[in-house]
Amino acid sequence: MAGTKTDKTELFARMPVGKALFTMAVPTIISQVINLIYNVVDTFFIGRTGNSYMMAATTVTLAIMLMNISFANLFGIGGGSHMARLMGAGKGDEARSVSAFSAYGTVCIAILYSLLIGVFMNPILRVLGASDQTIGYARSYATLVIVIGTLPTLFSMVLAHLLRNAGYSLQASLGLSGGGILNMVLDPLFMFVILPKGMEVTGAAAATLLSNTIACLYLIYAYRKASASAPLSLRLGDARSISSKNLGRLFAVGIPSAVLTGLFDIANMCVNMIAASHNDLVLAAIGITIKVERLPNAINVGICQGMLPIVAFNYSSGDHERMKKVISTGRAAGLTVALSCMLLFQIFAKPFSGIFLSTASEHAETALMTLAYAELFLRIRSVASPVQFMNYHASYCMQAMGNGRGTLLHAFIRELVIYIPLMFLLDKVFGETGLAAALPVGEALSAVISFYLLHKTVQKAHLKKPKAVA
Image (cartoon, rainbow, N blue to C red; front, side, top):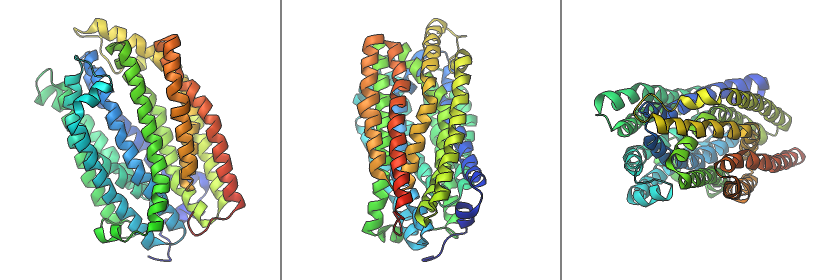
């Protein structure tokens, strides 16, 4: 494949921008939304018990689960975006070695993370806010979904990234979406039929593990099939043949992307710890709010992930006018979604929060108190949606253009300099309301910086034509 471009050149280089973005983004959005549904379906069915302590336990474990996304970005976005740039430069053999290395690197890091959580589970859960009432539930969930389930979960995400960046967005989405749909079916079966009452959290974890494993098997099949016509490989020899230059460029984007997501996860851990310092009901309410507000995030991440390979390809091929048009079109689409969801949550905060916790059980009193917190938190935090998208958009665009340094700088400023200090400060001054308000304030300040960094990156690309692959 050396010196040739794949059959996806028409999509990346010549198809009208709106149509190309639609073709790449819609399957990814569908995948993200279904993935969101099956991530929150555990919470939904656990909420049918009305048990706020079970809900708080899933909030604690969510922070550990989200770290998988960080590891997936290391090889999925780092390897995938560099693979797309190599495709744009007609270097198919090098792109193949990058894809194989990304796959094997994922396996190694998944095994290490599983061992880490398995050995240090109790202290980690305690630090994240698990109380005597919630740690048993949290431990049973983490054992199945994280200790045993990290490998299929993480491998699925990375294979989906690589498929998407090679132009196979539909196949990537089918794998992740299929796992989500299967989890929706298996959750109530395991929680309320197979396992006895009181083991609903364990049942949800077992259903998630099985669903992720089946999705992983499908994505391996789709990846191997696509490798016949795309620079995708699972051969160890291809992984070992990666050049030091390509390895460096993979990590130049992958590490900042992983750090960006990791810092976001650390911020969520801090939110959980501060919420838990108030009480378990505040912690459960924050967990509900985070699940609800992930709807616009899922759609907008889908837009950004669909946009990324098109931006990367045109950046590498030198068609910067088309690249800028893709960036502006993606920005307009994402802001429309974010503003619409913000308005929706302001009007319907109470029913959206109520989806995740039943008040028709013996736990009705604590459930009502939890939902009162959740409604308030959702109205406050949803204001962040438009500026939060601006941060996502700028980050993905910089990653597509190989600007790992700008991505990393933005991540550190956004989370460590602005958001985390703000949540401690505002919580101390205003209590739980201040903790919720830290998100829109922090994201707004960060969006100003992200817009500046993206502008400088695009300006640099326009003024200086990149070498073979930047």
